[in-house]
Length: 331
Image 1 (tube, one colour):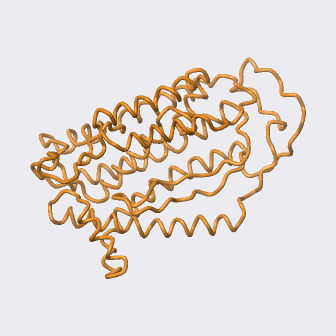
Image 2: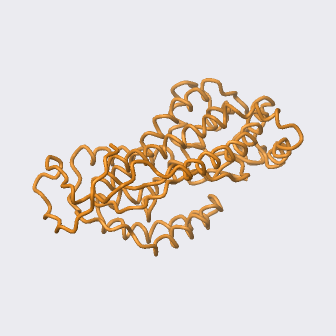
Image 3: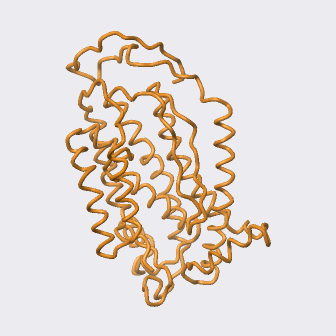
């Protein structure tokens, strides 16, 4: 929905008895541009193309490892990085990984974007973050530039991205499993320089489609590895704290639980790092502690969610459990 509504200083009504059935008055909405400025679209496209380059590098690395029945390694990734200036056309082998991953991330962010449009919330286009990491990117985000005025809107904005991104990632993961190679020792840190974690959804789908083969010994096709990255990013976004997607969902259910979770969860992540699951949890714990002190968007009408949204919240919890990995990278 793209119509704009004028702002109003009228006093908001008390919580209605049936929020799901009651129409939202126009006074809840501030004026929202029909579309973000064209210059932000140009910026978004530029960042997308720049991120495509780094994802092609990561994809070429995964493609080479897949072709040679080898685990990924930092040395091979650095070698793939040099292809940017030595032999850029060789990066074409990274297209299956890069396009799949960017499609998952873009779908995730567009879910947020269109939820914002539906609720007349001013937001930016999706911005991608290029970075020469093993997976080629640090993800993507949108900027929300106007208040989220109701619990219903807060939930829809938070849950829409993970839900639609998950729907795109699962078929890609199934494709990757069906075309995966069995490589003994792939999940053994003593035999592989980098071991990628195995989430519950990968274990379950591997048992279904590759019965009798340990999921940790499956060398996924690059399309499946892109799905792995997308599901890992989904689990990070669904962490129930601060202003992450999971934080928005939890806050729409219980503001009190959100306050406590935003304090306790960073400490739990640091504890995971202390017990040598993954050193990256130090960064995430510190980041969430810092975000904890940012100003939260006020909710002007905290009417409880309807049953459909509560069910969707349970689905997002299930997705988090299926995708989360205490040790995503083992070196």
